[in-house]
Amino acid sequence: MSEVKLEELVQSYLTIRDERYKLKHEYESKDAEIKGDLEKLEQAMLSYCNDINADSIRTGSGTVIKSIKETFICNDWDNFKSYILDNQALDLLQQRISDGNLKEFLSTRQSEGLPPGISTMREVKVTVRKPSSRAAT
Image (cartoon, rainbow, N blue to C red; front, side):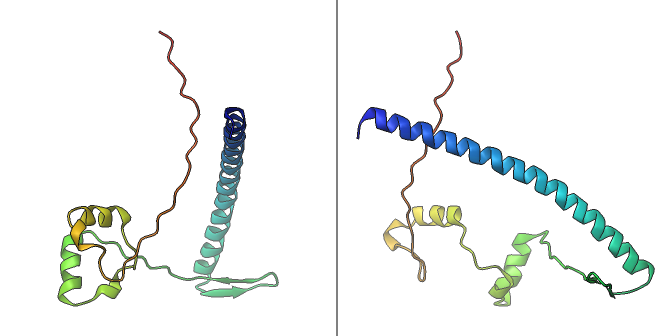
């Protein structure tokens, strides 16, 4: 592959990546604006439900349903982890591997290989960087 051809590939890649970034930024900006509008409408409908003490209201355009979303927050992970282990309650956690923590764990146990039930997937990728601008001296 010639140097000229590679130069064209890099230029095209950077142009497309910059355009994608621009479009994504425009989308996220407009989406945030629309999301804000929806939140205002949701608050108005929630107030309406609260004012008439209703959990749902049927209209000709659709039904408004008031619900409660409950989220749990851990303030003491060490204590909670002990509780999980003491009660064999691993199902209280989401099943996801921390890639960084597992890599660190494995780095001290290279001879043991991967833990049971774990496999690895490697993906080779190309990264393209713009040329660095040199500071004037």
